[in-house]
Length: 208
Image (cartoon, rainbow, N blue to C red; front, side, top):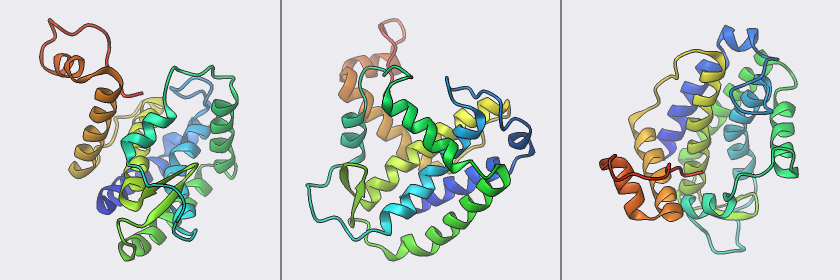
């Protein structure tokens, strides 16, 4: 999971350094109520937060959960975009981006480089606090890998550029995680029918 996370972060770095990002910095993004700047900051937080979380002592309280349980605990009916949590998420993204695109890209690369050195030295089962949950390090990284992959696409669409490919190990891990979330939310047969039998697919199937 470490190599998938770091390899995908390297792909994200390329988009954060794109001149198109600078040109469109203050424009609306493909996500409602997000400016491109805030979306870029939110994307970068997937790396910034890992560095913040692993800087804390290993968590001893609470039974660790996996990435699927983490996402299921935090997803449900789509919230109103003016609710406190969506507003807080947008504000945090803008805060990360406050220094402008060049500063954000530089800070992202610095954090990524530090994690490249640090993460391989940590046990993959090290308990890490992720907001109000505790996850083993590899599952913590999987949650942020999902964030990187999903929001990399959001940002590329916002910039009207092709979405860069991510490492195969990242696509496999994210596909597996999202499929398991979709099965938990919708049931096995609806997911299988959506993927294999369009004539029996009914409602749209999504992980989130």
